[in-house]
Amino acid sequence: MNSSTRATARTTWVAVRAMLLFTLVLGVGYTLVITGIGQLAFGAQANGSQLHDDGTSIGSSLIGQSFTDAEGNPLPEFFQSRPSAAGDGYDSGASSGSNLGPENPELVAAIDERRREVAELNGVSLAEVPADAVTASASGLDPHISPEYAALQVARVAEARGLAEADVRTLVAAHTTSPFLGFLGEASVNVLELNQALVELQATTMDTKER
Image (cartoon, rainbow, N blue to C red; front, top):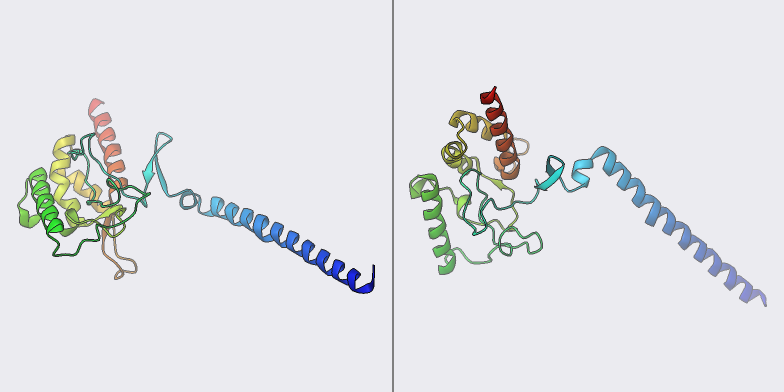
């Protein structure tokens, strides 16, 4: 083996060792360290910001979901999310908006129908129905509604659950998030978190009455 061949072999072996080393350090070690930090310092976020009920995951606070029966009718005892154009509704594997223009006849008809349904469900006039109650978000997975839409539903939810309206309004206020830094974005209410708190409130109220 001449000197040129030995030099090439030595260089190749150095390159292979460097590749293996950096694969272990950056591909395995770095991944394990970051995963560990995420689990220790930001466990909830690292695992998808899931909410649990008696140890069972009921969804993620980052992804909206429908609160309807098997036929798609809204359950009166729950706060309703905004409409979704993702698949059959809140399909995380088909995130999308309707992609229909504001003057598209199909979209206009859908909005008019939703407005009538929301007004009838909550016993209010058509003019009182806010925009987010009848329009889907761009992602189709928005977990939030406006405080106005939440307030619109308070009376109906309170009646369906046998709760005082004042208690339900207080719950909505407690789950209303202000704009970031006071001016970025809009105030919003996470529907899944609110509904979970609503179930807990009813359970506490019933337990108190039984005593």
